[in-house]
Amino acid sequence: MQLTAAIVGPANGLRGEVILDVRSDDPDVLAPGACLEVAGRDLALTVRAVRTHKDRVLASFEECTSREDAEALRGARLLVEEHEEEDAWYPHQLTGLEARTPAGEVLGTVSGLTPGAAQDLLLVATPNGRVMVPFVSALVPTVDVEGGLVVIDAPPGLFDDQAVSERDGK
Image (tube, rainbow, N blue to C red; front, side, top):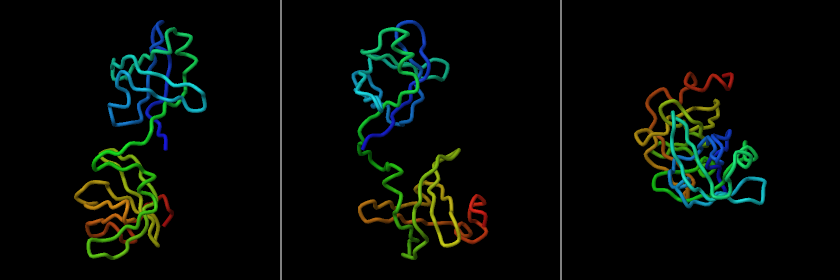
């Protein structure tokens, strides 16, 4: 499965450099020499250089040598192959896993993952609605993708009716 590593923004300068909206937390996907496919096009780009300037990520590619080349890439999604990382999971791997307490009681089913201000939030569909669980090891000590479950050591009140997401209208 291919995942979005970055989205190309506007050109920067005259030599084909672009501003990137990076969507990966793995710095190796944008390392010099890395090859990225362009979604929807029969094109692959080889990273020549990456740098930061004023909190923005700027990149240049071997195949992009002019401002016109860079502008033609604007809005393109740069793709990489999914790769395994220790103690890291992709949202599609978590969706559908059964959520259980440490004692084995079923809490619900993981329906997704959403970025949070301090940490990602694991979304758990329960009979009463959706519960957002901070995705930290203290609350989610076990993730067993192969076994089809996550263990959630929830503090009191997290899975009560009053703790269900307001978005669900409950």
